Amino acid sequence: MPRRPALVAALASLLLALPGLADPVPAPVSPQGGAINPGANLPVPDWVKPGVRLVYYSGSHSRDSGRGANLVPDPNGPIRDDQGNRYSWAKNVGGPSTGNTAGHGYTVHDILEVKDGRVTVRTNNYVVMGAIGQAPPIATNATTTVYDAATGGGAWMHPQTLQARTGKFSGPYQTITGQNYQAIIIGDKQHHQTYDVKSGLLLGELLVSQSNIGNTVDPDGTINPRSRSSAAVVSFVSFRQLDPAFAAAGQMPTFVRPGLTLQYQGGIGASQAIGGYNTPPSPFSVTLTVDRVNQGVAHCTSVSQFPGLGAPPAREPKTAMAYGSYWAPTAMLQGLRAGQTLDEDPALMTRTVVRHAGPDQQGRNVVTLHTANPSFDGYQTYDRNTGVLLDALLVNHTTNQYTRLTLQNMR
Image (cartoon, rainbow, N blue to C red; front, side, top):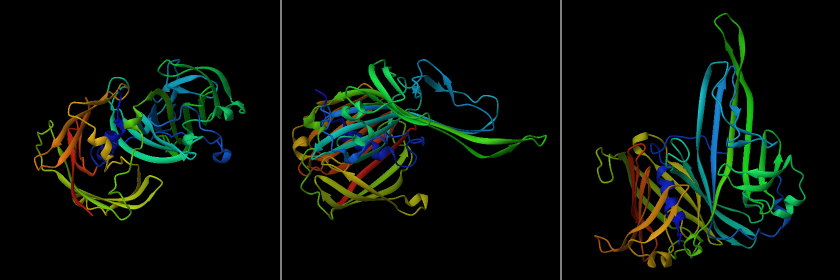
């Protein structure tokens, strides 16, 4: 039975987002759902429930050039325009490229809670350093967001709303993974969304733009306009129902309260293998303060400091449910046993198991979770009695770097 992948993915995302652990990738476009009226008070689609996981391919591409093109027709390409035509990324044509950035991967939405017309969604982003389906993805960052339940922030649109819409295209639609739907495309050539008419599920989104960013001059003095073309795409990959007992929000640990401060000390270094560290780590610290807890959501402030970089502390807001990156529900932790497989995700190529459950070397009652694919190994150790994160280790095999985070103080 699939169980609780979001718990470990959250911590993996936190650590891999730290400097030096993953190459930067242009942020994929996120579902906007501009046609949705959040105040419509529509009922929630019946498939929107705790434990649902939606996986999307996401990619972005930007090119600065005097002349050129970014997209070429491709019947199997991941990009689809408002007329239903498919494209793939193109090489620069007819002119020199003065700048080129691109990246792709997966965006994973886990539905944690549906309550009082609101839906809480945990979103994890995974970058792929190679071809989709061949190179295992690496977690980069994670967020927890509360949306209007009838819209999901654009990840779905209620079928009643779709029935009243007139789209640019309506008819059979096949996803990049070969799944067939009756779909409607809403928007224009520059920005549009594709929805499944029956369920309201977002099947794809495309945002393209081109702008003049100056001029280039040839040796003979000819002035050529310089443009920047960009495209970002989201394409539906899979729908999974995880075990709600492990994928839902759960009960917030009792120690999570306004004013709580967790202080962690960490290090980033080079590694040839797990346990084989060969350089002294670059130190950093993370301090998380809970500002308020409202309706099961903890609103926090995270302050990260990297002394070796000579940069000021980085402050950012964070939200977390009962299992946030720094804690997990005690009832869930106490029910786990060593050797238990919690989840296997075919799209992310990950497997999550309980590596240890019981006393550690210091006599604490702990649970260590291990999530891995060929690109990374992640270990998270939680106190079973309180639910607080005690230690985390992440090894990125693509960059041969590791990150460690250890709790120093809780008050």
